[in-house]
Image 1 (cartoon, rainbow, N blue to C red):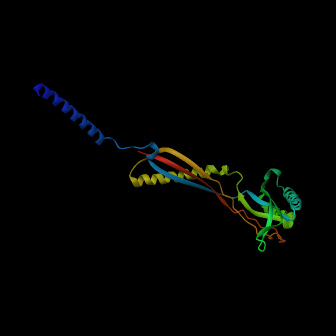
Image 2 (cartoon, rainbow, N blue to C red):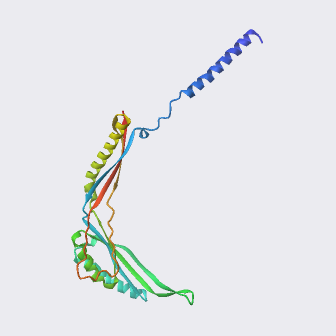
Image 3 (tube, rainbow, N blue to C red):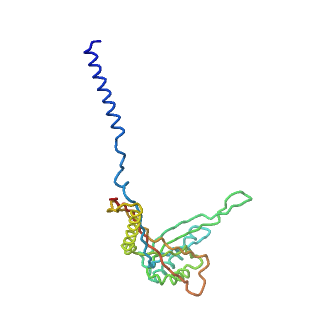
Length: 247
């Protein structure tokens, strides 16, 4: 190989080595993955609670009748249910506040061991409604009136208490939740030796008060005294999730 050829080969080799070196250098010095903006900063959650007195009662009630034929069972159930509906309206429960929740006609059978088969003994008609009671102090009297109207066919599954307009209390709960979250973020910043910046992400979730359930045993409506009902208190809860930047 001539001197000229050796020189050309040397230049090519040096260029190749330089490219490899630049590639290696780029790989070693690449900046670490920074993630998205919401993955940086101080993440906290806050909770705000407001205690309220329920102002509505939801009564779940109805009629259950069993007879040997569908027609007989349905006729008896309809008569009793009409008396129950009349009792509700007489106590001031509006038509718009009464809603059918369940209606069914079912066969009633018993197992005959000797013949190893089911024997039909009748039919059961069930009609259940919910009644929203806006005058909550009248709940006990309404229960008594319904029980008297429905007689032995009366079925009361329970009563629940809630707030008709929980949104009216959400502003106060929101303020408490934001204050709670900010206090946590400030403490975390102090403990970490950093300066707390402005919020970069805020999310909210609310929890309306769950119904307070009371249930009644069958045959518990014969007492002469009015049924005592106490709504007690419930809580409206609101939660926030906030991300603060670190300065």
